[in-house]
Image (cartoon, rainbow, N blue to C red):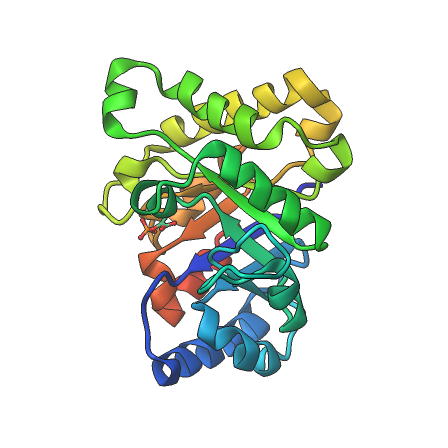
Length: 253
Ligand code: PEP
């Protein structure tokens, strides 16, 4: 059975103090209220908070995630953070290829493939993001475009490594806009992506991969989205900054 995942991406929000309060609220609510053993909650917080937050999470139901990494293990890469560093402070998941990194930091499919490799090599779980712009959808090239992102950054992996990878489909037009893909649009793309994985790795492997939806997921729409057969959870931005709403999302499976 595929793992169901509610992952929060705090992005560049919250001071350390505010973050500590939010973290402890979410951890306590999840401990009490998320009873489904197949549901995993991941909090992807800013780098400077990871070390302290790793020590504050006292439940196996919540794991700590980073929002980025650099593919080299160490060396003269000023300002960057490596996978061994993240691992040493208890990080389990790493978001790779978020559209904001692709857009503002020009991260290419090839560079993201390196990050995926480094993450897997270090024994951490990549949450690999993909998704099209509104223009690409309007032109009707969205399926090919997103399939291409997966091919370029993931199809060099062994089946074993692919199975350790989480994919997040995040249509760019739905991120932080309040516009959510309809359940049908999300399911349609997730099925296209699972079929694409199956074309290379076979159906059995493809059926094991958790594919999350991201783009204005909230407490009101999560249940319907997560009920779609190929939607295995959410990567949540804005709503992950509110403990009550994010916990409600994690209870929506
Ligand atoms: C995200 O940044 O991954 C995201 C989906 O943001 P939001 O939920 O705010 O649309």
